[in-house]
Amino acid sequence: MNRSATHIVTEFVLLGFPGSWEIQIFLFSLFLVIYVLTLLGNGAIICAVRWDPQLHTPMYFLLGNFAFLEIWYASSTVPNMLANILSKTKIISFSGCFLQFYFFFSLGTTECLFLAIMAYDRYLAICHPLHYPTIMTGRFYGMLVSLCWLLGFLGYSIPIFLMSQLPFCASNIIDHFLCDMDPLMALSCAPAPIIKFLFYTQNSLVLFLTSMYIFRSYTLLLRAVFQVPSAAGRRKAFSTCSSHLVVVSLFYGTVIVMYVSPKYGIPTLMQKILTLVYSVMTPLFNPLVYSLRNKDMKLALRNVLSRMRISQNS
Image (cartoon, rainbow, N blue to C red; front, side, top):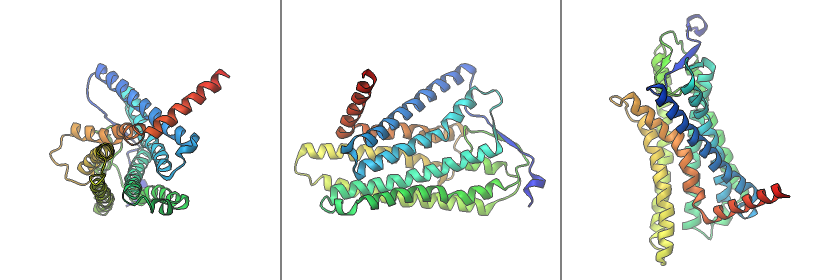
């Protein structure tokens, strides 16, 4: 079907969150604070990894890239959401909507891959410490990180391009705060079972394979932790692993509900809240859980802040 002949919709309306103007101002303030804290937390990790020589190791190289990813993942949705809350028209252009859709899915896929290789890094460091330096070389972890970014941004390029070619000649109102798969597919006036199949198959594969690998790695990690002779060492390692698992479970649990399991019967407001959890809250939690609770990272951040104060006073 020729999209140029049938395509009428040139922009979409993102309804966002319901409520009075006072509620909109409250939501704007809340999300703005969360976004600023996300930028500061992840930005601090990037600066610490970049400037502190003691953090020039595979684990912190991965954490620095992960923090960089989280900044862009939050930025793919939150700035537009903030502008949309204050907007009276709540309009997003056709191309802007699909660009947001592409970056949101690509960065989300990259995050799943990053979580998997970070679990692999921790598994090697704890369960095979003697082999860790010979396996996690600079070339190897550089290749892993590059592969994550490459696969994340290539994976959804074809399905999203195909979806953008569908005729949208019905309503242009999206009852969401971002351009997502199901709301967009619902607005198409032509059936697209192949595109739906591609999306759901790819979503299921990415989420299933990475989550199974992550939980398997942490199962082996926890088993190794319980064999640590020191009670203090066990508590420290268990605390680290369990906090990682909580954040991973939160991310994967909400994403699986949204993109793998059937959503029939889930209220629209609940779908928005679930989307907020993995798109807005996890980029805020991840630096706290993965990095800022780490003693070496906190020391590096203090050193960086000291250098900044010295340079300002000089």
